[in-house]
Structures are given as structure tokens and as C-alpha cells.
Length: 146
Image (tube, rainbow, N blue to C red; front, side, top):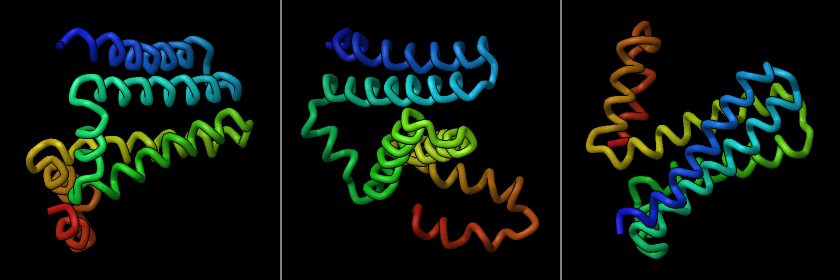
């Protein structure tokens, strides 16, 4: 059964990669950024759908809506949908870029919930780098994430 999910997952990741290459080749024009965002998001949805082939849609939904990752999953999927909508609607390209970054950060936070102590590692990295001057800022997040 290992081949079936890859038939869908790899094209999803490949579509996201092609979108990145198209953006790099065309340069940061408004149309290129909108096309990148739309293709990147579609690639992500294809990759998410591939997991359904691997573990089944019901089990996938149960894992995605688990108490420890329910909010981060819904936030990530919402950012995917909003990013796609504003990219194809022709909203100012600055908002599209901002939403792509928020969507990537949300996806990383959601994915870290599947790795033991993954979120805690992310928090510790921020505490030791950009949040080092004010370490108390991360404490509420640590309590929620653990």
C-alpha cells in the first residue's frame, strides 16, 4: 500500500515545487506571485488528500482534530483557503505574500504536533534566538503547547 499515497502526495509536493521554480524564473511580479500562491496551495491540498489514502479519511480527520492539534489544524487549513482566495481574487500582492508566510508558519506549527516535543523545540529555538531579550514572552505558549 506504500505506492498509492505517493501517487497523490508526490504530485502535490511537485506542484508546490514547480510553483516555487516558476516564481524564481519569472521574478516577483504581481501575476507570478499570485500564480505561485494558487499553485502552492493546490499542491498542499493534494498532499493533504494523499494522507487519506494512507491512513483513511476517517482516521486522518480524527488525528487532525485531536485535542492537541485541533486549533492549529483548523488555523492552518483556514490560512490555506484564505491565501488561495486572495491570490485568485487579485488582492494586493503584499497581502498574498503575508498570507503565504502565515500559512507556512501555521503548517510548521501543525506539523510539529506530530513530532514528540516538536512544538517545544520550536519554542526553545525562539527563546534562545529572537526572543532572548524577553524570555517571559514565550511562557504562555509553552503552557498551551505542552
